Image (cartoon, rainbow, N blue to C red; front, side, top):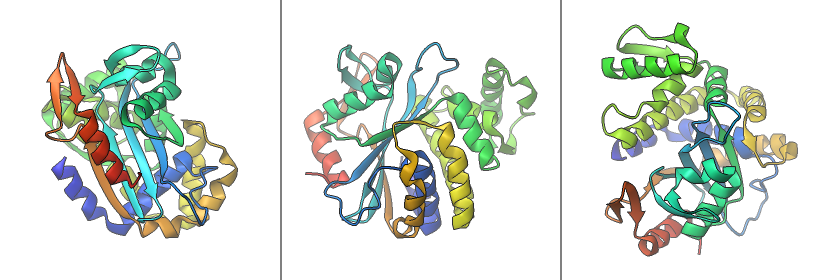
Length: 290
């Protein structure tokens, strides 16, 4: 986590602009983010599922809450780990990633709102295929892949029917969409899900960095291309209006955090159980909500 935080700081304004471009591609229309006054921060739930077909929702392997706080002029990324203990409305106690599998984005949103006393405005969700399209739209991502990672990555490519995309050993690559998805799925190399989460963030960083090189017209076109690929509950009417306001958000400070917080959880029966009272207090303070 500390390494990722340090990397985020290197992005500067370009990185913040790129992050906002992605977020707007997911969510800008109809959010009210561009209004001159907004009583509460805007919260957008970003979801990445392991769905391979249309027979189910898939587990949510990526759960990130983007908070836009106009009063403090800050952007906050909060990652919720997949193995978190969660009371899922209508389904009982399970790991957090089961919420999306059981009832889709609405159930996952309800679960986070109930367990962490939040109000989430909108959601945006991608599966393997959609994430691959997003990566391809930005021209791929540059990544260094170890020999051990390469073997697992190739196995995932085969399982997704992309045998022709296999890599030839460890090295530096520009990964295409499916290669990037396979890289993000690697779990049993290094520190299990914690390191997989870091890989996911590295891919996102590369996407953001690529978008940071685009001018306003190019960003708008890319966001228009990405937006239709994303499952969401957002009205697209205000899309261009929010893109016009991008320069304002470029100036915002970018921060990140992870739930569970270090020192505020225990491991029980393969679940990460937060100290909910302390976690909620700390989370709300970071988000700038009462």
